[in-house]
Image 1 (cartoon, one colour):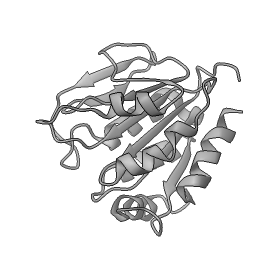
Image 2 (image 1 turned 180 degrees about the horizontal axis):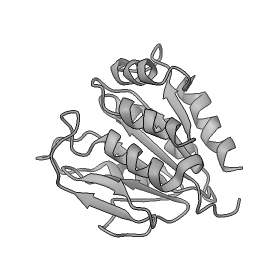
Image 3 (image 1 turned 120 degrees about the vertical axis):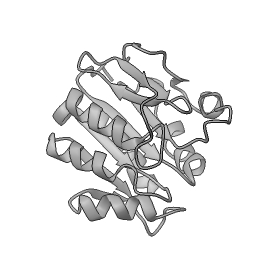
Image 4 (image 1 turned 30 degrees about the vertical axis):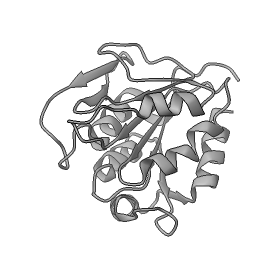
Length: 190
């Protein structure tokens, strides 16, 4: 696979995130050419161990980004706790402590909306399990920018509230169980 700097994957999850992401991220091969940016709702007072946990499970490099870090192909970047992760027009990460969105910081909507502006039709976004409405507005921004909208099947999601909210705003989103969603991410890189 060759690097695809004009394309990216963004994922958003909340309650049930570790289980869902454990069925997606380890499937990606070492030569996966797309960057993957992930927002998971983590309480701000807790140390985030997600990057460490998934670094041990995944074949790609996994970490929390630094502010103004260029987004590199074949990496998985987790938003740090209590920081919004934004994608700038020059395809760098920006970290922000602006107020919570949908009661969340980091916010899935913030990541998806800024990534949609930066990547347009080259963006693949997926809303996964969760118990609030974060990600729905962001997914709508992705479709309005011509990107690909994916939603974990609410019937198989550990917490279906986020997938259902996303589908209410973006009924055209492709709805897939996690195994099919993983295949879709692999196919998108081809």
